[in-house]
Amino acid sequence: MKLLPTLNLQNGLAVPMFGGGQGPRKPIELLDFIFDQGCNRLMLVDVDAAEGQGNNRDLIAGIMHRFRQGHAKVCIQVGGGVRSSDHVQFFLDHGATWVLVGTVIQRSPLVVEQLLARFRDNLSAGVDARCGEILCAGWREPAPLKPDAAGQLIRDHGFKRIMFTDIPPAHQARPDFETARILAQSARVPLFMGGSIHSMAHLKLAMEIPGMQGVAVDALQLMDDSDLLGSLNLAHI
View: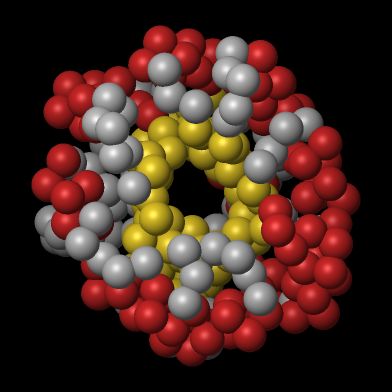
């Protein structure tokens, strides 16, 4: 099981994915914190680009260069508003290992095929869902597919992995592992999950999902939660 500390970037700052007690911080503070833990994995999400309100691409490029300088071998996944080959190429040129595409899978199958023809090994398929309903366009619009059909579509396209972001409603205490199971079973590719993973108990439950390869956890939360922080030091994480 791999753990990806995640920086959600908006207006040049790292912000909590779903609001909450953690205030925005300078990304470099979180990056230095991740360095200090010895973690060589990282996920970066451009919230502004995902919402169609500008982008943080130059900031992300700088973060990736700095992160790679500190480690001999790293894994960096970047997502948020990736819509074209130029976007993918930019992130790969600046150090991304995997680039996440989501909305285009639902809306632009021709673009997806073009991206896969050039970057298949480096692309991750993004699936965002709330209570099993798949969303796109920065979570603002419902997508027409159910989770099993979405997984099948990803498999048919030939993606190498899925990043499933579970968007929990206010009343949901437990991550939506059922949708995670459906996606993993229908896509038959390694699955990563983020969004609703908030505790060591969640991490342990995630490890029981067949096909689950890793989880993404908000770096702001890692900084403030000593139990979750300890997961970075587990040999199997």
